[in-house]
Length: 126
Image (cartoon, rainbow, N blue to C red; front, side, top):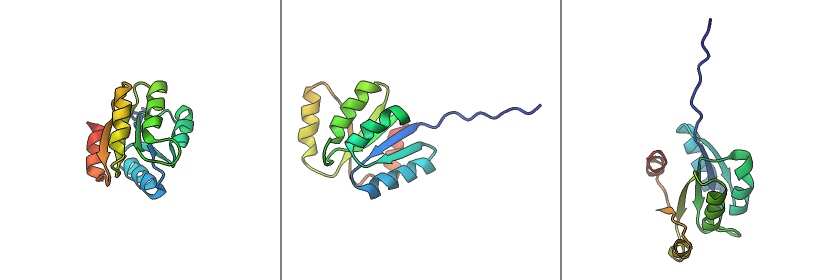
C-alpha cells in the first residue's frame, strides 16, 4: 500500500504593480520561494482576480494609474478580511494617501521601493 504524500497548500500571493517588470519579477521570486504568486498590472485587475485566485496576501504598489494600491487593499480586505496586505511605494505622495486611509480606519504596512527580496520574504513569513 502506498501512502499519498500531501503537501500543505502554498500561500497564495497576488502582486499588483503597473510596472509589469516589477510585478513579474516579484511573482517569480515568490514562486521560487515556495509561494503561489500571480502578477497583475493594476488595482482593478487585482480586484478582478480576487474571486478566482483567493489570495492569502496582497502585495501592491500604492501609486498606480486608475485604482491606487490603497483602494485595492481596502476592497480586498472587505472581501477577504484574513488576507495580509503589504504595500510598497517609491513616491512621496504615498504618505498622504496612507494617512487618508488611516483616518478612515484602514491600517496598512508599507515598504519603500526598491524592495529587496530578502526583506519582502521576511515580511511575508513573519
